[in-house]
Image (tube, helix red, strand yellow):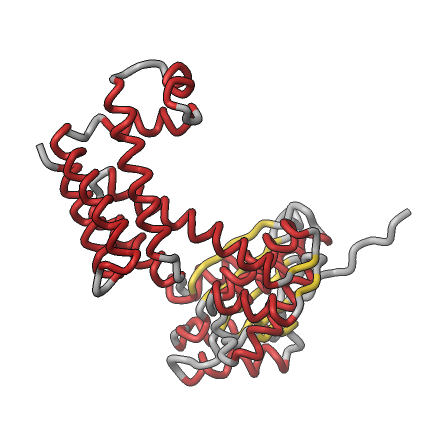
Length: 326
């Protein structure tokens, strides 16, 4: 027979402002509670949305001895009455209830600032989630993420990943996990460059899709995100040209079964189907104008334009406007 699961800690303090680490720590507390009681209920609520009677009800033991995990978020914003209620509770936690407090470490009022110290004194399990502001800390984070996923990353690979993905921990964690899965565990600079090119191509097609549907605002947002990622201007221009030319080719043969058109045009059926939907909003004049715009952009991003950023943005806006022209 397997040994019974250990009783979970009744009090948890998750302190810091690094959102990914905070979320993981909350999840770890929930997982520990559910090892003891797989049916333990999760309730998450901001302290500013509670009154003391509501808090007391949340933290009261269940009549049926069911486990409960209560996450009080943003405890640094607690008012005097709620802070007092929490301080009173942690002196005598209820059986079957796991209380998790998330706290930035600061505080709006005196009692809110005292909550972390009181929880530590009460023996709470503490998860430190301070912002990772130093490059060395983020590098250690990435190495640990790769290790957790079952892989290894060398120095050049780590440098390339930090350079191409940036400082956002969620994106770094996702990239590390994906790279380990793609490479079988050995992550080097070449693997990172392949990964980044894939991200760049996805970003480029997202910009093009928004532009050819006439959504100027979304197209600009996607473009600025792509430029922040460092997507090459040539890739953005190619994606926009591909989208416009595909619509023009599909529009030129009229409506038909996508599978029949796929063979005729030498395209996958899904691409034909999407282009058929997009073509409905285009006039022949608008398409002709867009074709001229992407041809000009191709030359501009290869050295003709004084500012490639400006050239791409102007082309995206003009293609969106051509789509909306009647």
